Length: 424
Image (cartoon, rainbow, N blue to C red; front, side, top):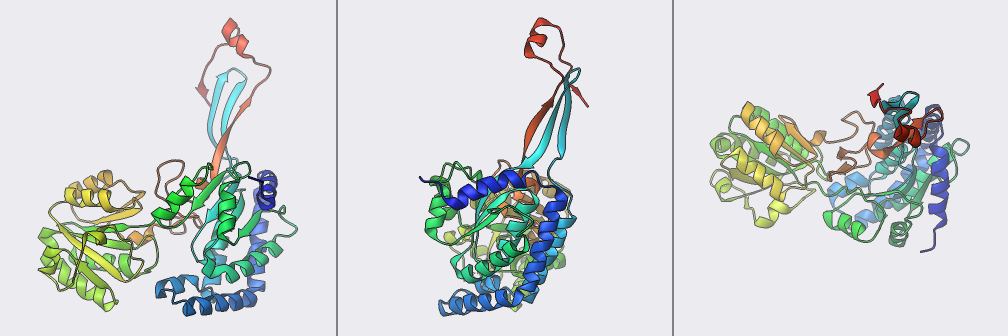
């Protein structure tokens, strides 16, 4: 496949970004922030056109909410940029110092991955967050957002490019717009180092099957909350309502609620009342429907990420059954237990195979900003390189630097010098 110019430009930009000082990268972030504020009316106007088209196409309400880019969203992304600037430089961090022989020292040093391609949903604020994270970590970025946000993303990218015109190398970031662009990106293995797709399992699988470039999958979020027999009922109701309704069309919202049989009668009526007050449709298994009135849950419900005001409920007999259900039906994103029992807590923490395993708190905390990462490029549900919210550290790799004074391997074979392998 012929190398695309935007991929070649990103490759060259990545080499130059890798040697910029943290002061230069932070100045560029400040430039982006200032340009977004300066051109906000243009950005808002383009977003209004995207919103109008999405409404004509009957985009779901929760997705419309994510598409909207207004003063509040602008304030959020600007605050996120401030947080990124305040974070320490992820590059140049030394994670290993070892003397191999006298005068021959080995260092493991954090460095950028290089060129990162990110495909994400119709959330314009994600464009700024991802570009900012890549910039702070010294990576060039190829960015493809959902088609619903195309006009907004163009306006945002134009503003960001203006803000860094004399601060960053050309090609540091590029906006891809079509499916053909994505397919072209998947073929650019000579220029691109990593692809991060955000979306459904089927979408992530498609990306993995159509590229030889390493893929860090950010798949769907089928999150669970398990209410243990010992849980405080009032606290459990509060946390479950937050986990389900604080935001609906997000990957860290709870989609399935598991309830221990011994607390079901006391907990479910109160929880159902609070959820219905928030407009949530409840679907329950047979035992749940013996306690509260609700729609019947089917086997498909246990495998569904609703991204909407729908919650499925299943009554279980033990923490072990809850863990087994989560590991079978979940997406290995984020799952929580509400309990006052130390043994149940430890079983859950060690037994649930997810990137985030929580105790007595909402699954909505699974977020790079809330973790203090500044922002995130997504939640990695795999186990290699990075897991959970991927912030600056997840966008870095490392190189080994070996500093000597004329040593040779033959010297060690001859016994002239001896290995010490002494940590410094």
